[in-house]
Amino acid sequence: MSQVKTVSGCGIPILGNDIDTDRIIPARYLRCVTFDGLGENAFADDRVQLKGEHPFDLPQYQGATILVVNGNFGCGSSREHAPQAIAKWGIKAIIGESFAEIFFGNCLAIGLPCVTASPETIQKLQTILKENPQVSMTMDLESMVVSCGDFQSSIFLGEGPQQMLTTGTWDSCGQLISQAEAIRATALNLPYMVWDSSVSVTLA
Image 1: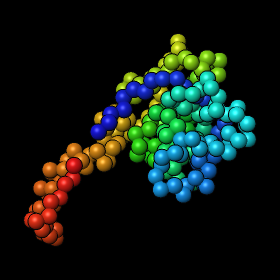
Image 2: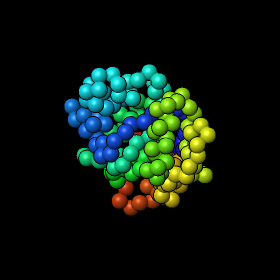
Image 3: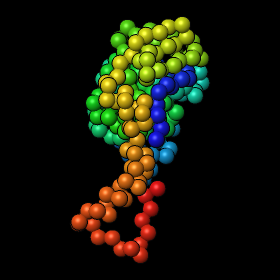
Image 4: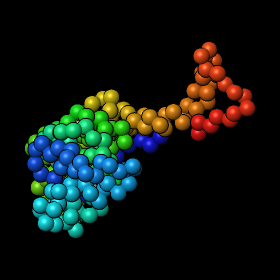
């Protein structure tokens, strides 16, 4: 299981409140069988409208790993494709003023931290990133501090999600695989389970 304790790299600012999941990944891209390829279509319509001036298109933000957003980010429909598209683009953590609840849960399910900070902190981070896109950022989920160049500030995350990320228990599939023998032993003792000894069952 993958523990998420710190995320470091360059940041990328996306300004505006109430950026919904349809803007993050338009509905026409939801017909995919897998999530592969969603990253290149993240914010597709916004990028077309801005004619290459969207942060996801600007050369100075290519390779960024921390997304800095404003309030109610990820509102709208519950599509899990939205955090997948952001992650496939290369984002490893998001910091914002607030997040829509379902979007936050979908991010947690793939190990993508969504932490909050005060509006003043978010505005400061976005300003720094606009003035110096190559400045180094670090988000520490144990000390709950974000640093961006010489600037530091507290960040916030519920105790449960914080523990899930830092211990790796956000990864439900990983938990199942790590407990394969215990699951097998329990299943063998369930009276309603019928096992064929000639069939090999592999959980890992």
